[in-house]
Length: 165
Image (cartoon, rainbow, N blue to C red):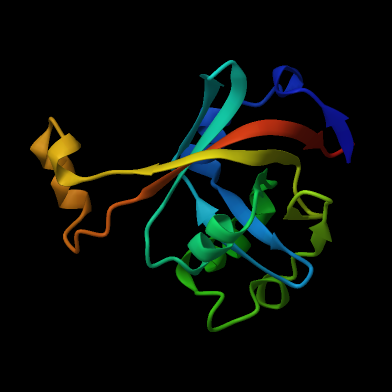
């Protein structure tokens, strides 16, 4: 992997999240989890290049995001779509996602990612927030939350960007 800046990334990150999906991963070699992510944003906040990621409270990955200072967002070539689908439909409480998908964990000094990624964004948590029903001006959004399991919002400063050489 080669280190670049977020401004060097030639791919449309909105398309990566929305159509190609990615993985959000947190933890360490002692314990980590990953899950598919398709909700997120990249921009500037508080004077820093920032990622936002949205995680429901019941997701196993949430405890790793809460317990660690850093996380990664990673994106993959199309041939990994099946692996990403598994990471979004199975829980790390029940299976070893790396073993089940064949993905190879890499333990960066900040947070883990997988060697097969074409793009890795390493983030340091700066804030955590969340949604609540009274925030929604468009009440149609509530259909996304039939179980009232509102997403936590993680704000991460981009501290490193890696691309496959």
